[in-house]
Length: 309
Image (cartoon, rainbow, N blue to C red; front, side, top):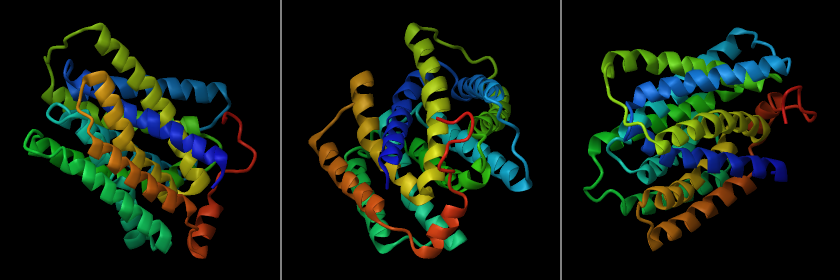
């Protein structure tokens, strides 16, 4: 595990987790699916324009396009779409906590579907991390959170796990921004139709907070964080990269407390310590030889391709 990968992972975790608070501001003032569709269109077109300026080309091969479509539908359409709808009823901090269950789902799906059995230390770290998530979540699900919203968040976490497993086939080659832009447009198509059917005529409560939250969510969690995620998965693999999602409860709860006034208790701090221990175990673990060899075959080149940082 190298310092650059840790830096990318921490930056990704902060940007990704902060999106829950900004999304909460958006969905309380505007129709969620319509706002998400507009966000994807802006971020996707911006990413494609930058990629084109950097000389990046369209992906080639069925596997790459299949990965882009699956990632765009599962992450942008299902995961974020369901979370945006759910956060009309649940707190941003609770949505962040549920999303952090994704690493264990990734490990289990990778084991069952792909035969990528994690090393014992990595598996133990994932389980410990989930224990920390459960501790934090136990203080949140006390009757104030709507069960329907929680169910949407859980289904979204499953979709995010599927999206994570599709990242490698979507991001091979030095065209990451091009891939990010394309999967954003897939997301726009996925949530755009439901938005037209369900939210036509919905009112928007315009405010400075809404505009700033939308701009921040579009550029940073939407575009920059997705690009960092692709870089991270190509560098260290899906299971280890997914471990950074265990930071979501702490960062998500902290940002929600600062911006939205959501409560932050001492049990949250204890849960974060347990989660951090789980992340450390996963990062120290070494993948079994067969899994390591498979990931090395699709890892990012030592010299960044044109257009990458």
